[in-house]
Every structure is written in structure tokens, then in C-alpha cells.
Length: 111
Image (cartoon, rainbow, N blue to C red; front, top):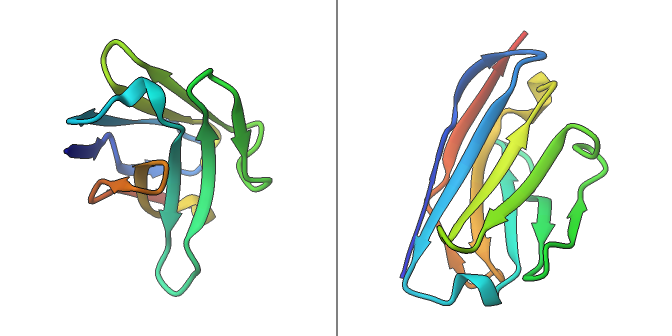
């Protein structure tokens, strides 16, 4: 089983990034998928969830700015992040049903 995030980086406040999470080794289309973030000194936060039918849920802190999506053919999860804020800076991780996790990709938003 392989889960790997990409697309993080340094961006100015108000900018955008698109994260990807490539997977293999399990039936991607059958799992609900999550984006989670971990900032230094803060608790891990569930950012967004998408179920196997495409239904989505968002944390209040990102609703209206972030969009989670999935491509079941490519077995890939995405997170489009717009209007980024300094407080969005964190390590972003994806997981499949809280079972299979990637190492994360770092997002840094500068003021």
C-alpha cells in the first residue's frame, strides 16, 4: 500500500495551491478519503473528507476556500486551496479511512 502527497510549497497570503495524493495497493474507490493538517504546537485538524460517492465535508476554518475532489480512475485525491491564509501553514496529510496514511506535504503561507 502506497500513499504519497505532493504539491505543497511556499505561497503568499491570498494565493493558491493544489495538493495531490497518489495511492496504490488498495481499492481507492471504496474508501472515504481525508485531508488532515498538523501545525507545530497545534492539534491535528481534519480539513476535508470525501466519501466514495463524492459527498464532501469541510472544517469551518476552510469552508468556501478549499475544495476536495477525487479521481477514482487515477486513484488520486486532490485538495484545491484558494485564498490561503498564514494560519493554513501546516503539514498536510491524506489518509484512506484513517487507515492508510502518507508522509505529508508541507504548506507554508507567508504574509
